[in-house]
Amino acid sequence: MNPVPPAKFSASDRPVRPHRKRKTKLLSVSALLFFVCGILFAAVFNVAMHWSNTEEFCLNCHEMKDNLYREYQSTVHYTNRSGVRAVCGDCHVPKEFLPKMFRKMQAAGEVWHSLMGTISTPEKFAERRPMLAQREWQRMKANDSKACRNCHDAQSFDLSRQGYRSVQQHQEGLIGKGQTCIDCHKGIAHQLPNIAQGINESDPQGISLDIFKPAIQEKPAENAKE
Image (cartoon, rainbow, N blue to C red; front, side):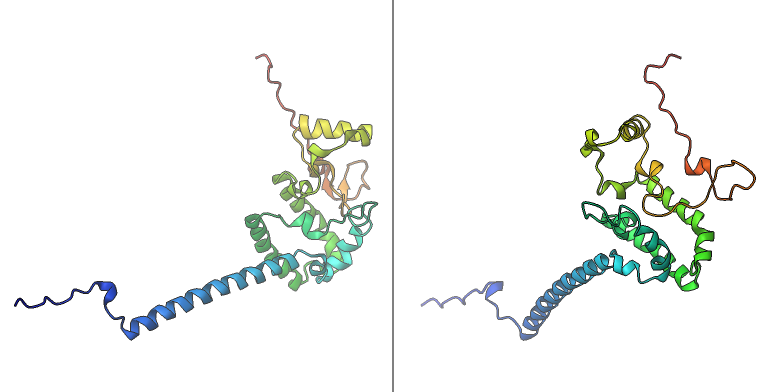
């Protein structure tokens, strides 16, 4: 009689060693914990970002509360007939993730100046106001007044409800001359710094008129003859 050949076992039929079971279980638990921690971090991070854009957060600094906030309360962005309010973050913090993170990193420098007391008094703030205003105008000019466009869409303007001068300025400036909101609407939410108009010798020193209202570069005619 021929002997019975030994049974062949596949790799899946081999008994799993105890240490391999423990290792697999540990990896599964670790992956689950990593996933849960990632969700919790994202939730906390999102809440922190939202809170840091609120009006209450900005008013923690007395420089804002005692200076800019008082001015802002007297503007149309604070109170108006429709009840729509634009808070600090709506105008000064981008909505997109990467630009928002870059702006938050810049804010670290502002925290440092707050600790140093750079603009801790109205007098110090007034002295640095021209520089601060120009910096913000340049930022808004560079991004085509993106913060303004988060609420104001030129394509949705009802020109029939605008005054003649507004209609003319919007059509010529936004379309014909390639201007952006901040070119004409400086001081819409905060008082303007002194503007040196050069009228007489007693004219207060301040931002020169060519910086406050730079000359418009007219677009060359497409069919201009050489």
